[in-house]
Length: 332
Image 1 (cartoon, one colour):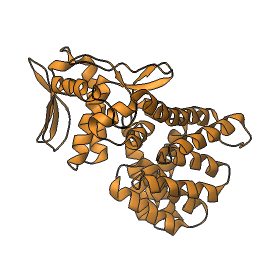
Image 2 (cartoon, rainbow, N blue to C red; image 1 turned 45 degrees about the vertical axis):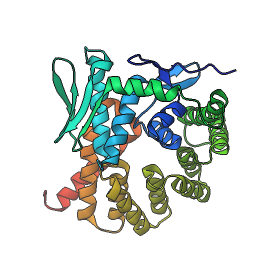
Image 3 (tube, rainbow, N blue to C red; image 1 turned 30 degrees about the horizontal axis):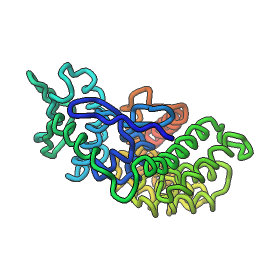
């Protein structure tokens, strides 16, 4: 029998399953899993072999939900959450004494004796953390309709834990041999996750990227299409489809795909890089230069810990292309 999650009472700090967080904030579990997979909001605790949300994670989910609903861009919300992650651990007052609000263009965290800006924003957001704690305690003590809580959570965890196992195996794979044990294990884990939760868009995308790496482009394209069928705004699947078009000799389709992605996600680094390459392939050097410069500037703004070897190599390649294009344009 699975261990029951620890939930927090008013003002206390505990851990919460994805099912509980979904129920509390009325955010679909598939969206929570997608947020976790993309690093937008990850559950930061573990209980045995399960990933769980702590109370600070609940604050992040509430902030994200309300700002996104108010029309704030995903990139700006991400910056707000990054700032909150940095600031909240250093707050001296207990979490229950805080109030978090967005006023004019600043996200502000208030303690009993002072307030500080976390990051920029536009929407008036104002909630008491103690009220959130009370809401957690109230909502999560109500019975789940139509199912016993432990059994219902067990099914959800199984799909997500298979997905996490796939991520771990994929990270261990060197990216070439489809007979490698890590590839086989990752594929099996993703396929099992999809079987248990056909709406888990990130599993389709990750598996598709692996198939593309071993040359199964048709299979990869089908999986990216499935991902977009589950989540029509998933930028990773959109970027991967554009990359497939470019790799198969269709730069015009790639350009259209990257431009469509950048309309909704203007700071998407992979799309800026891919669009720059595709524009170069069709001889549009001036436009390519602009997107490669944006890519380089975006990478340079990242914390060092977020720049892996592949991204660093792309940054070097793009930097050389930018220098060559500028020289060809007379140093402008």
